[in-house]
Amino acid sequence: MAIKTMTLNPGDQPSKEEIEDIRTSAKRPVKYSKDAPKLTPKELSEFRPANPEYYKPRKELISLRLDAVLLDAFKSTGKGYQKRINEALWKGAKELGIIPPQ
Image 1 (spheres, rainbow, N blue to C red):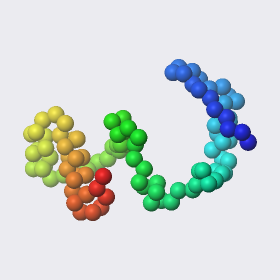
Image 2 (cartoon, rainbow, N blue to C red):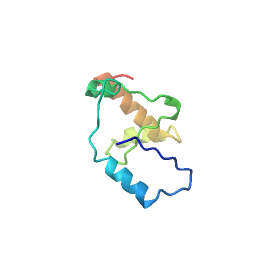
Image 3 (cartoon, one colour):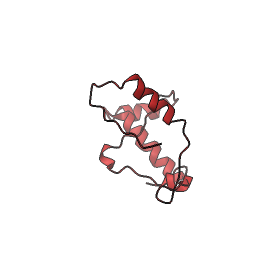
């Protein structure tokens, strides 16, 4: 099958035929080649955003119990305390070797 491309401008809606093409293309097997080899999990883990300035990691809403003293200490630092908690968790996870340094 030939490669099919389409361009949608903001506000455009794809036609029913285009939507069906998108749905069926996801079910076709990927064809790997010398120019497009299958990547190993290690190779995939090494991917980085082309422009880190625009990269926003996915955030997930969770319920987390923290010691009241710890939470109060972060809240006392003002607006953005949740971001600082996230940064502290990243730092701790890297130091423990749970995630690799980036």
